[in-house]
Length: 142
Image (cartoon, rainbow, N blue to C red; front, side, top):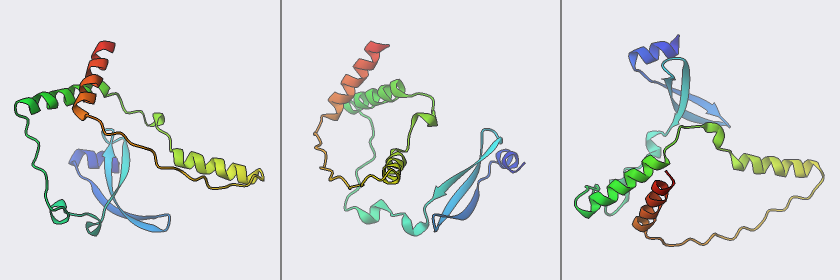
């Protein structure tokens, strides 16, 4: 009933709740045309920073003109070619999986030692060139 009424009035409720010993601010909204309620955590005002107050210089909004328009068109094509229906089961909480493995190892009597992780090297890439190659590869596959 609440979900249907919220959908009909296009309203969202603001709530607070406690999870893992911490209080959270949340939005409760109707989902799937009033068939369900969804809870989304929010940030408190003191947790949100105004970029203009934090950064010395904010970049200008990207306005496509000339060559930039071509770049924007390629970016849009890439996004469209990579878009797919949302399937939550395709994503795993790998952190929780790793913790469960450690717990199982500990229960089995194995000694658990924290591994040293070396930082992964990163490469500097030409974003536009990578975008162009990706769009071409996707178009070739279609």
